[in-house]
Amino acid sequence: MKQKIEKHCIKSTVSIVEALKTMDNNKTRLLIVLENGKFLSLLSIGDIQRAIIKNIELTTPIKSILRDIITVGKAEDKIEDLKFLMTQNRIEFMPIVDDKQNLIDIILWEDLFSEKTLQKKELNLPVVIMAGGKGTRLRPLTNIIPKPLIPINDKTIIEDIMDRFVEHGCSKFFLSVNYKADMIKFYLDSINNSYYEISYFQEEKPLGTAGSLFLLKEKIKSTFFVNNCDILIDEDYNEILKYHQDNKNEITLVAAMKHISLPYGTLQTSENSFHL
Image 1 (cartoon, one colour):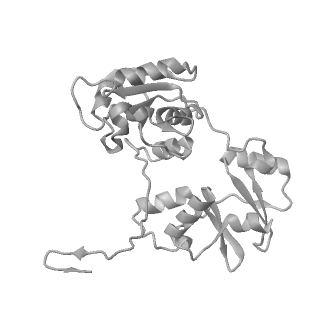
Image 2 (cartoon, rainbow, N blue to C red):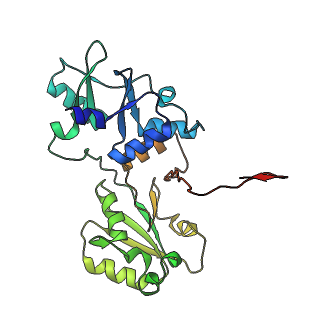
Image 3 (cartoon, rainbow, N blue to C red):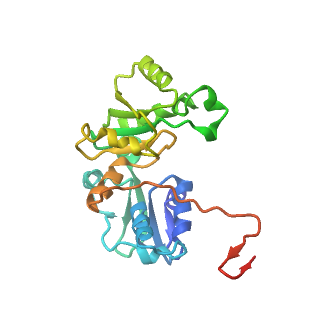
């Protein structure tokens, strides 16, 4: 019990970047924020995303970016009520708090449901995968096989990408191919996966990084996902789509934020000077 609580808790004075590291290490998108040992609030990956968009410094304490409205459970709540709240809000765990703001328990999703992962909504949106590049940074491997067919564990990277979308009810794929296109088509046709509905399209001449999307202007009339064939996204596509729709975005870009510590000296320059 103590270990479970410690894994999901963080102090209100911790910085945004440290909270991100904690989420990454613990493979969670939600943390309980404590202040002086008492329950204060919840911090989600969405809270951090909104802070980044507002250009809030990553060294800022998380207390300044917490929401006013959160969902928590009380000791007297019935299990059925907690199940309903967690299902409706798709919450990975529910903190149980008493009247004095003491954290007395944490109810995990797997404590109440047999599935280990949150139930995913069926999005049923088309997916475009950019699979036409030469994969020059992976040479000499890509001198023989195209980048989409590079194996990751027991399957190719393009299968891994498509399977993640299939889990969210997306089965219609448009593959932009060029380099070793025949090999990609032959392989995907040979695996006979009934979950994939694949259409191929090919540039007659190079159109740039995502220029081939122009070729789909008469084929896709709805919101759609675009994924490079070398990018694995370990996020909930429901949340990505919701963020895109809630903000009425034309395009929403998913990126990974990395903080890298350099073990060597750095050089900072300005117009007329520099210093180490």
